[in-house]
Image 1: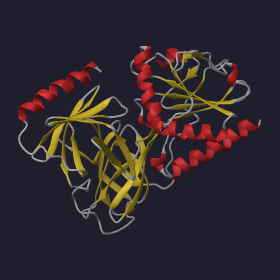
Image 2: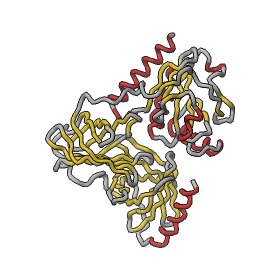
Image 3: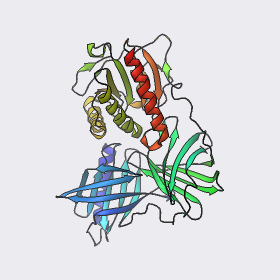
Image 4: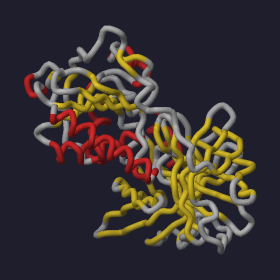
Length: 399
């Protein structure tokens, strides 16, 4: 937090020093570009909305809109605080455009934005349809991920699946030269995928940019049968353990454990989560829906592992996720950062991913554990998981 405040204050001074004329801001669509360490553009689009004195930024992610309410203008500068992920923008306004910094706790990136441009990528899309649609196995050297794409007249949407969860909503273009370009920005995930389509079944010169300075290279091939490792076989319970013995405070400061009377003879979903985790946002929305559907037979409890360990700070971060996801279930503040999860939950074996979901039956025994979460951006994979979840929960309730 101190780094974020420092960078914002520092940039205010820089912005004030270099501002020129043209301070009017246009409402409507904008095209923005974040710049990596090698000056590669990671583009995205947003709407600026002026409503009765308030300014909103609507970040366009695939077919979804991510609304940012904390937008303020001071003189020739615009400041944007993202609802989650401890990130934001500090922008100078000049000549009708904006430029400045995107700031995160661990790095910052240059950013520019231009009004009235609805295209994410400026090259002309292919006139053919469905050339890229389908499932692709992407080899990035030390790891493999799965791309799931849908194309319509050159516009491509989709996501990438990994053992720890998906990369959320991508949008881009397959251009007339056969170059595939997709990007994702939501304040948490900042990614650019580029590749060259060779024939109908191969991708060459694959590049995946993540954040400011991470770049992976490889190749891809069409593979409709590609699958990830079994997400239920990654994390388990250590020998001799069938449940958890934790006791953590909830958002009201009251200690909660699985031994509490309200969890007895109930099916319980234990969500291992954090507000800094984009996939946790998607899973929280899903679990809130399931909680409403199956109450009072189902209880859901989230264990919040925030980067801040002090209770009031960690609670503040957890509350952001509660608001953003519409969480209607208990959230417990563990007081442990993500790197200290093993201390908080010593019963777990081979923990690998946030979120991780633990299914507990009415007798209080752990029945299975799911590592990661592939959300609505993954299409059929999300639908399959939803169906599996529903069937398993209904069977547990019926026992």
